[in-house]
Length: 102
Image 1: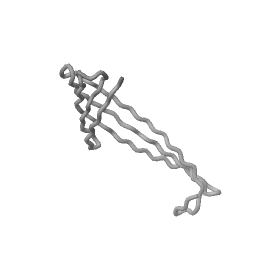
Image 2: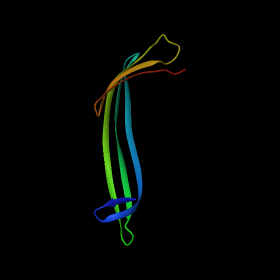
Image 3: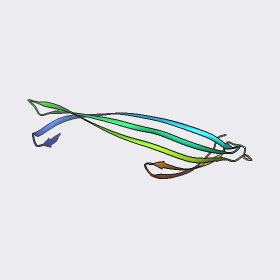
Image 4: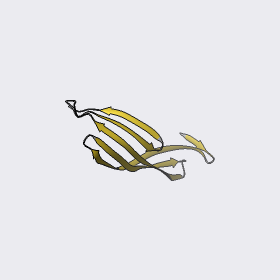
């Protein structure tokens, strides 16, 4: 239940999202990689309001782009494919993480 300037209403709310991204990696040196990521997400929200005798449908959308660049270093002497990544992204964020695979 909700209430607005038209009075009380029952509602049903739904949301749908779509996210797309493109990632690239370029080997600068045997164990050093330059990485980039470009993408975005879009979410569409819909709400059906039932006021009893009348109803209405409202739609609203939100979009958010993202962009990231970084460096990754692969440790050649370790038995796994271990890496350390450092990066900068938009919306503004510093990222850093170790990664490994066996």
